[in-house]
Amino acid sequence: MKKTGLTWKNFANTLVRKFHNVFFLTLIALLLVSCAQQVSPTGGPKDTEPPKILESSPLNGALNYTGSSIELQFDEYVKVNSANKELIVTPPFETPPEFGMRSKKVTLSWTDTLIPNTTYLFQFGKGIVDMNENNALDSNLFVFSTGDYLDSFELKGKVVDAFTSKPLKDVWVMLYPENEDSLPYKSLPRYFAKTDEQGGYHLRYLSKSDYKVFGLEPVNNGYLFDQPDEVIGFIDEMIPANNPRDTNAALLKDLRMFVQEDTLQFLKEYSQIENKGLAFLFNRPVDTLEIIELGGTDISLWTPEWNTFSDSVAYWFDKPLDYDSLKFHLNVDGFIDTVFFRKPSNRMGKLKKGSSKDMGLSLKAVSPSVVNHFGDFRLKSKTPIKSSDFSTSLFIEDGDTLSLSPYAKTYLMDVVISHQWKQGGKYKLLITDSSICDKYSLCNDTLLFSFVATKKEDFGELKVNYDLPEQSSQYVWQLLKPDGKLVFEELVSPKGEVEYKLLPKGKYQVKVIADQNQNGKWDSGNYLQHKQPERVYFYDQEIEVRSNWQSEIEWNLKLE
Image 1 (cartoon, rainbow, N blue to C red):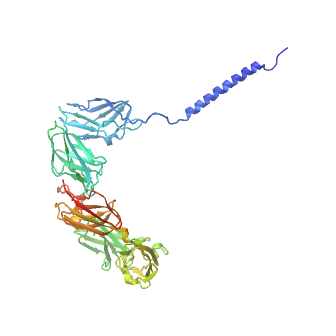
Image 2: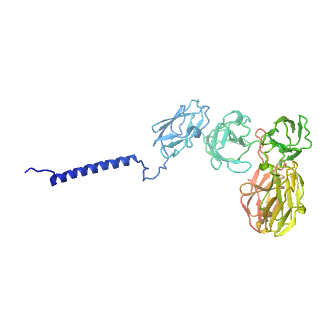
Image 3: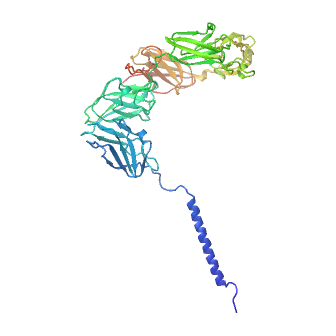
């Protein structure tokens, strides 16, 4: 009898083969998907080890070297990372050296001729790092000598801002073996180093000599003092080196950095104040100013407004002036200049109807929500005030309504309201429409201010008994907030006391300036005149003024 279809055995074998094929294909698919999805490897600590130099040619510390390259063999693959910016070579090369890489080897080559009997120091900084984690090499110093010994004199020090006494980083400290004033202007230094985060520097492997020390924070990334606004510093005397075979680390006094004061007087900026005035900004405080309009315009009725520092003045027209052009002759402290103004544009002249500037005189409170119970409430005007009438204006003191007239006074740009404010009292100030008008016939809209008066508990007292060095017969005394903002300033003698009766509670610092020329301000230095910036000293602790509390401190400043 002929068999048809599958037997149970054949059916079972076929089923097993199909299952194996499906399983095999599924496994391959999973492997392909797994390979396609790249994930970060897990496990194992992060590489924090810096690359190490296994071999070098020449050897670090080699003597009598006359070659033109350095080869460094590392223990792992490395790369150069802004190496030319990081590299410091002393004495410096005139032509920058070049880096080359091959496998785990870095080559540094140069075209300059090496100076005989000289120690060369290469500082790589973070210019050579490993491939994966950018760890910088473990020792970034490499040294060799073209003579038969390594120079070993060292200099250490700190660089600070002359006005704030804060340390400065990334400042070049440069050494010259000659004592000529022109060197920083025209010659590369013999040795140099860059300051760290704390303003510190360390010059090593120096040869025997007496050195001029000069600091530079360059504007153009060079090594020459060739820009007037560059930050500089210098030490007056030459620094001597001892026997170069001896290690002698000298700690220098702080290198105080400053920008030389520009003593030239000139007009820096000038501008139009809409169609109401002109503004002039000068480079220095003005002693004498002569101004003439060359087109014949009479400026005798214009109102001058000088700023606190006497280096800026606004001339307010007697009325809005729709001019085609104005041309001025200026003589400021002997400096002659000519200034030309064109016709004001529409946005500076006639304002569109309904614009915010056309709505009235602009007045803003100096401190809109609080007034010192022993002080005044002040409003500032953007334009000169011509007239005022406070007969209909008033202020409310804890529910009592008072006329404003006996308490308000107007000045050129201010409205001052003087009153015996009640401590903690609540006030509302109402200045009615058109109570104050400027010289251009713009008057105020109705103004309403709500504010409170301070209380005695908001203040404390501070008394400082001080004894300062006799290096100056006069000091500028400054009380500062921790952020450096000036709170009070006065002139004091070298010994005495300063007392503040009503000082807002908070933290303060005290700073004094040795005012040697007695002009009431800090003066910068001048390199060619061998003039150092005036000395600045800070009380070494932060002072806390507490509510309703008298703090008294003793400051006996002794110089080392």
